[in-house]
Image (cartoon, rainbow, N blue to C red; front, side):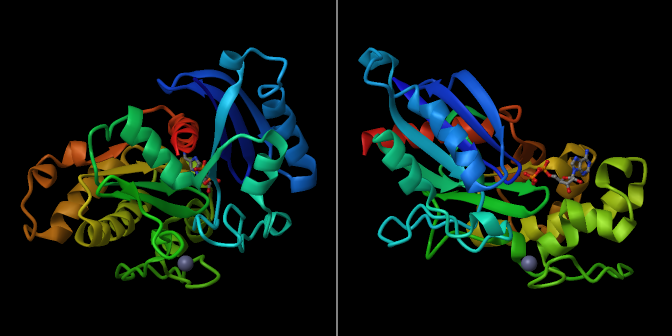
Length: 299
Ligand code: ADP
Ligand code: ZN
């Protein structure tokens, strides 16, 4: 079976064709500007792959979309499949699912970008066989995808764990970057927060240990909260900031310190494999979208 996969991001739209083994057979990247400019190119890519002139086995049987948010993932909602109140004003209320369904006339699966990445890792990456796991992206924003009991969590809309409150670390004078909450997790630990606090981009601060020490403490605070609330079997950390790989041992150390022996599980005793980078080399999002397509085809 061939599936279409769209990883809709704030800077680029990755369009791909994949199969049931998660293999990516073809891929293009289209810059995200406005819906008027971007979507015709996205549609053109997939439309050629659902043409009735193709043999059936060469046609896409469904499309999966992992989309930047906030998005409406509530199946029974009138605005299901729409992008909601995003800071990217041109995309507010854009009907992503309806647009693609109308253009292609095939089943469309849809979820958040972070749930997509998690689904990729659960299906083909480092979380295979697990029923409870979370995926964080720590980049321009902070977002969490979560699976509980084998189901991707949506709840009343979808989790927004990037905005949980932080206890400000003593000595940190920074007020926080989030326009809604100031010193929430995203406000204190996103890429733009690092740049704003230290006056330089994160990528230029690799040699400053105090930057990553503080960053690791905020990330560990958030991970500790998530461990208490969702009891994941694995925590996967991705996004541009986590390419500072020295963060991983520090985050593990502070999580262990903050939990202070209160939870004793084999997962926490093996913390090096409990808190890990993604295993799919940046393809977790698009591979998750392939899986979303397969799930839509089966529905
Ligand atoms: P996005 O979140 O926009 O999808 P990324 O996950 O790449 O994209 O995150 C971009 C953010 O991560 C920017 O704020 C950038 O400064 C930061 N970033 C990217 N690379 C690094 C790096 N090597 N070290 C620290 N921060 C980085
Ligand atoms: Zn916030």
